Image (cartoon, rainbow, N blue to C red):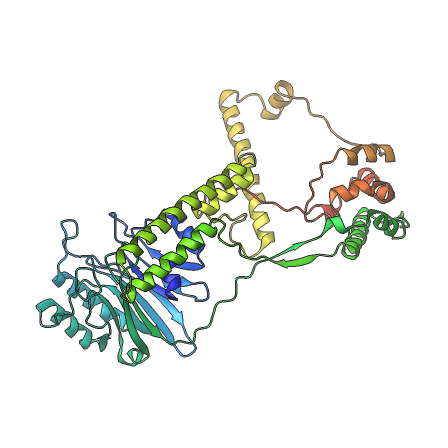
Length: 488
């Protein structure tokens, strides 16, 4: 990833990723560098796999409806520009092996089928990848057939006839139509800075793309510590919560309580919108930054012919080893610090493993979703009751189930009346409350405890009115529910 960042690459086609379907942790690690990835791992055996890496300021749409072929892997994505649409195609043709017994002839036959389908799709095609064809020898049988096939579909190969592999051969190709090929600038074949035996093939294309909306994250909060408690109490005493109509309904009283306290909170402690900044890499300390500078200097000297390649490789491997050690030490310490907080611990683990948690299933209507949850659990309870009834009918069909439950299990008690509470009962209840509070509460619980004397008249009215009339306030029937899903 550091190699791509230093080369200022925007989109990268990768072959032989060796990724698997469950490698979410590796994908999450890639995203930490400010990149996105579309990955297509090999399904039935190890190795192989292709992917497209692209920066966050670019939006690629993956095409999942691509025909699968036996002799090569292919994936497509769409890049929308200001003038047209570009269809990016990543191709990897593995060489003939005992496990993959597919010859050049097999590939040419399947590749022709793919090109025949590709030309019917919208978008300007740009094919790139590891074809494992020695196009530097155009007179050979199979390279000749391959180039003739490209010409048949009005496509051109643009990579210069120079080695793209440590053992020689122009194996990594870039193929486009003639019109798009004119937009391609010069190529730069960079010898591998990594352990890959293939070189990095760089080329420039000027495209005006519509950048995706900036994924800026914001949070809203209040500075509770800035509240002057005495002034807050004074405003409560002069508000409508002290002089209210005692003939109002319990719903009106709750509405008055919420609106007045919310306004006071906005006056004394307004909501602040804060932009969340991306935290820098915490394990990239001075030692690593210094070593990275030495590595870059050694690489520049080697590429200019003024330094030894082995010096660069030594610094590259040393940086990779030390960065891995420091990254692991940071995550271990972070997890160890959260050992007593299960919620925070699993949140960190899910982030490291790439498990994107979601509090609620995807939905468009929150009301319908809450009704679906209610119906699910109601149906579950009803099913249990039906099963109990059916089981009882089989064991004792002559005795009704309701009488059996009342007589053998419990005696039902009814609540038909409630006693009003006084100010002493209210103070006792509030003092025992936890300081936790919900985002639906007009004021936090700790502030309610401090101002309970000033709020006693309205609170007593709401509680006693609800108890005497048997009416639960509509405004208090709302709840924020965050279910933990056991299965995806």
